[in-house]
Length: 357
Image 1 (cartoon, one colour):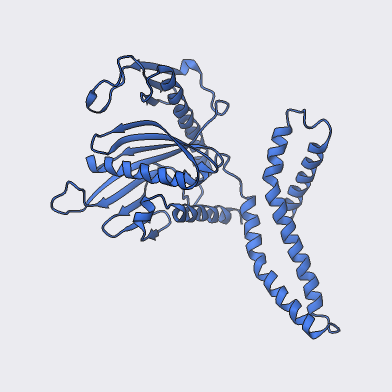
Image 2: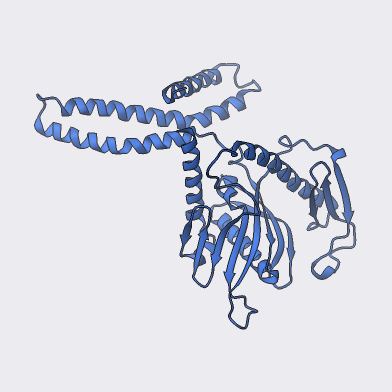
């Protein structure tokens, strides 16, 4: 199918949906919400098509005016200037339309579960994991998102062995999905008297939060263990068996939750994380099949892949997937992530565009 045929199909479907939703019976039908969402998704594409059509019609009119020997010289000059201005804008409009036509990641609009774990490097890795967590906290604040801490395992010296949070807001997963992987830090630890640079790492996983309807979990596939919660060093947090460990037997995925004093609340939080991990498990299988032939994959989400290095002595951060180096490490650690996220998004879009062109 040619691009023009596809565009005509999109406009025809948009008009059809508009007529269907305007009918007297539409509001009471069970399909209204689905039709409304599809209509909303198609609106920016149809608006972009209309904008391009308008620009091309204007070009044709201006070209006729410019080439009309009987027209006033000043008018022909003005037509020529306007013609060149519109002609310069058209490639950008065409590119925007191609991006709008790319298949959407249905998880982009979802909230996310953020998981951080200290990797190699002992105490320094745990301190770096805590720094990363604060970086994402500040980024969430900058974007007006809500971050809810779900689980944290501290080292006692300010580090995090593990931290799990849910982040909700507009386009959360779309903005954070490229963060999954190994984040490496190079710096002189405060405990290092010799001033030697140490390298340590932390792993980040960003999972789209799943609804109950997305993932069907059979009770017989779960093993639920309850135990007494404990804090750093093993001291008792409370005296009841409120901590919960859920094992999904078919996949072997294990989720533990002990931050709440209520067993019921811990179980609810653990199920949220489990649903997200199962949803991502299925997405990963589909993505692996779909991306087998891809030359470039920015957001593989592979947690064993080293994606970024934070070099403190040189004040720089490097994303290895797109060879992007920024010399503003202090601002990045303070939550200024948009330059990195925008570059990763653009690279992924370019790779996907190359596949369809």
